[in-house]
Image (tube, rainbow, N blue to C red; front, top):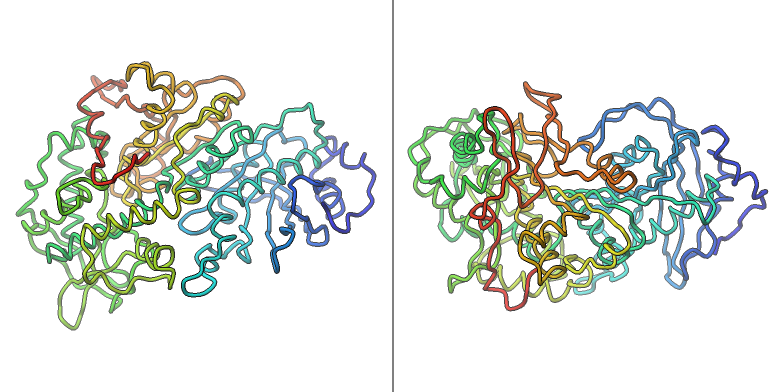
Length: 583
């Protein structure tokens, strides 16, 4: 229901498509377009509506082409009946009526944020869609879920958990799509195409919608999703536990040297030497990381966070500067790197999870310099630490110590968290039959050098869907059937949800949303996914990405997408330490 709805002629909304942007962008028009009784138990607050025209806004992103856009920025709030002090904010950008192409776009967040601010919404305007985001009811668009997840020590805010898990995005799409239809005067018989776009946590949010609300979506463009939450978040601590177990805390420059040597050695394995490691599978099969022992490394002194990698949510270092780092790659440093890449095993040698691909940075393993002792020390990755403190222990948002934490401890945390959050945050339901029957399409991509979410995580989910939905088909037939509507692509050299400065000539699928729209609306199958080099000497070059399980191979200057069984095997793992199936 809608409170205090002003009395406006319905014709003023229905005729909006023939008007200018300024004609449809007013508080009264937006109030009149608020949907009535769209979700049981929700009340929209018409007095909260704001509307403002924005013109000549210059936008740039890795996820859509650069553009100058005009739009109407509408915000309003709603509440859930019976919940005290409940208020959820939505922000919706509307294109000019002349640019509207009967499309809706929901956008997601990252980390523990349920939205990515204004950075994702422009993609909707560029592609003729109304685009929306939600604050999840957390208090503001800049408030993350972790800030309101804990009511008191030992007591989670379960409304926040469910809103973050999947509920808020469903409400956004239901309300946003009907609001869009009302604003632009679409009848019930007129098609409004519905899309989702997000990466990392935003990718997990996208899968939460596709898996639950099949008929709500025509397509989803999803990057590096942070699903399989209990494994993914605990995985961030694995590198720290490796260092603690082996009692060696490598200088960041030593790890950077190992990465750079890996890239240099494995770059040519795809048939093209361009500074990009495109075939981490062949690297796993043919490169011995111990060959980096004895290589000289050097990094200049620096101020600010230690290490060459982009970090987030780490334990604050004791000082703000690091000394010159020089030396040779040690056997201990290689042992740390090799153990990390091998993935988590329990004390009986059984595999609990997998790790990052060769060529990815060792972000989780970054150490901090203690200027008093002159030594490099443990720096707890708080992406993992917060998961333990907040969602397992329920008594805070940081983990202060790993004393007594073993590989078995990590496995136990993964399993217990999976049990507790399977219906909310795990987000790996593999039977997508309803979505497929509804005609939905998914473009799913993941940077091959992602140092935050293991690339194999995406491959495992795609393989799980194949096995569950096509159990009686041969591998090739099942893969081809799945690729008719769900395709996953690894992005050569790419980092987490972005191009990689360590491999600047690598491509990035900047137009994935446009490719998805073409697939859904024009039946143009992205046999290979369009990608563009966005940095370095080759900026602007166009390349194509192979759809898994095919892999890129260059010969005489031409790329082919080839089938390689040995390569495929490097992506798939037997998680025999886990007593139930892990999708």
